[in-house]
Image 1 (cartoon, one colour):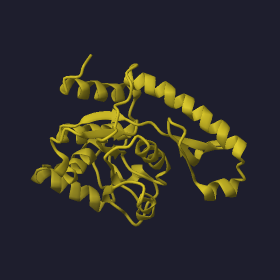
Image 2 (tube, helix red, strand yellow):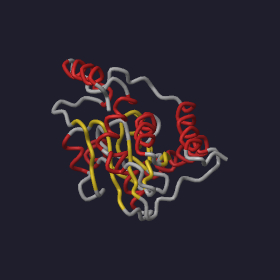
Image 3 (cartoon, rainbow, N blue to C red):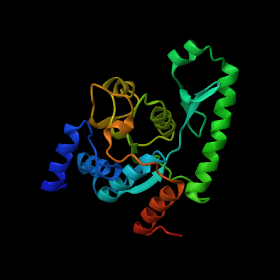
Image 4 (cartoon, helix red, strand yellow):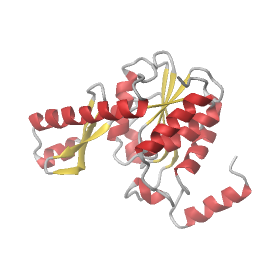
Length: 235
């Protein structure tokens, strides 16, 4: 539980338009909403790096669940890689923002090249984060996909579709904050959606955190190592 002082602090932050002190607090609150999954041996938390791993680590610890990563990547627009036109997962699953694709006149050849490039980066990050071990299999498992928040939701949707193809028993999306219209995209894509806050005004995920510092690769690796160690799976 957050405790009296923790709840007072949360209320003060909300009065300023901030809903979470940091990702760790968001993860603790998300774990409370998922408490019905605690101590179930079939639960796997699949966090989206990098920031989602901080949230996911708190969730996994409090549920006594495995922590692993799923690594989608956004597809950048031609000449403007920071502008997302969609996302791709490691298995090649692609989710497009059709409005952006049409508005920018992006052709299929570009999308294929960009997806191939981002899949190479996914492979690099997978090797770095997992240290050569494979991702945890999810067939027959209850899988909780965790991120630090959703904006358009394309990366999380690519991750969810890729995981769905692995035949989990149940697929749950859990995030601290997301706009209502983005949440709608996931209906029919996952079995359950857990979102703590759905603000009416949404500019970026970071606006709802007091501390939204960038998470490093080294921090991601350490969270995963700690989780394996606690589960008695350290090699």
